[in-house]
Image (tube, rainbow, N blue to C red; front, side):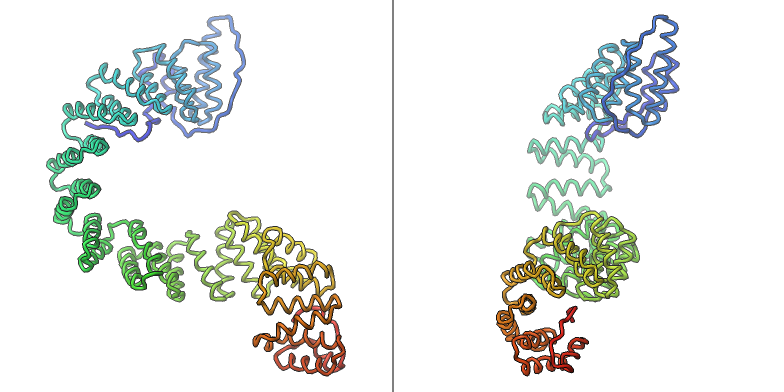
Length: 601
């Protein structure tokens, strides 16, 4: 006996059944081919049809019916619904049309209409079991499980040899949370069919809901008695005991399962868990590694088991060793699975062992180049290692393979910018802005970098616009405030705005000598030489600032404009010694006078 398990409502019953209930032979051909993929339907207003000649009306009705069936076959449910409705204007008492409309409205997810038409079909022909089944399904999709169960109750009494009707009655009662009533139905069915696996499982679930653990276990024991060599039944029984904290019974069952299958991963993992709780680490590790060595143990379950080690190693360094051992076992059991190498790479990456992580991530994308998350990890590591050449290679591939992903274009823009490929960087960053999944903060980073890239290519209006957009998103981004204000000061444009932004960057990061240098330079361009000198001298109190040729040159410029010529010459010369190579600086030293710089060195 074969029992069909219902999960939700089975909307896809064989339309072969429909053929048996149609009284008109002409409909047979159309109904045989009436199951197709649904299309979205919308509201409709069928036209009125007036035909007086009975023969012509019959011909017209048949034509519309066949057209409706054809539309349904083609998956054009909107048209089919309209055509069946037109048919009903001519043949308003044909239950088949109501039946068809009910099924169509189920397909287009309109349960209310489906129920209305199913009720009409069932009331017009109370003897047709297919109309009754459709009515039960319509009750089901409307969450009227009691009513659905009632329909199947009538069907099971009318057709006592059909066990499926009784089974479905029990399933709908279970959905209605009438667990005891459902259990009675399944008991009644078991008396007819004997022990059946699916039926035993359904009874076991209901018994657990009723807190009848021993009875639930007894249902699975029936399956074990009937199939003593079937390991999976022991595992189910062990899980029942385990879920109800009956440890000794669970351990005994899992060990029995291992006697049948010594490498069974579920039993091994369960016993490993008990050993861990008991503090028996040696036994725990033995069970666990045996399970991981089994290639039949799902790699997804293995990965899910290992991933917590990524967090645990942050507080316990010994967990890294354990996690890597398990990851290596996963690779050995699944040597052609990209997930295995990605798992080990994640472990290495989390531990800061980036060289090893790169090897495994590259192996993973070699095995499966469709895994975007692995490509992302490669880009992230190359960016973290400040390796623009490899970052450009990988990000170029990602941008081509995953054009809708933001990070591929973004990292390509970063790499091109670092390699001074500014036009390419601009193109990549603009592509990033058009891609999906760009967070608000990341867009601000893109606009900021675009501002730098546009400046480098002399496109000042685009640069200013990009910085403005970045600040509109993150108004307190000190880096953008600093860069934007500095570039404005170089051009001698909007100096008051530049002074305001530079001052704000210092309020955000008051210890930054770079921001002090920018502020001093903006004040210098405003002709506020005394204030500029104060800020420049504050910056040069830091040891690293005294090694910065740009800052030294700026200080010389300020001193010269305060008429401290000899001291200015001293700092210009020092800037040259520290590596400054600007043509302007060479002329300042040679001509002993200040020359306005047009760009920052």
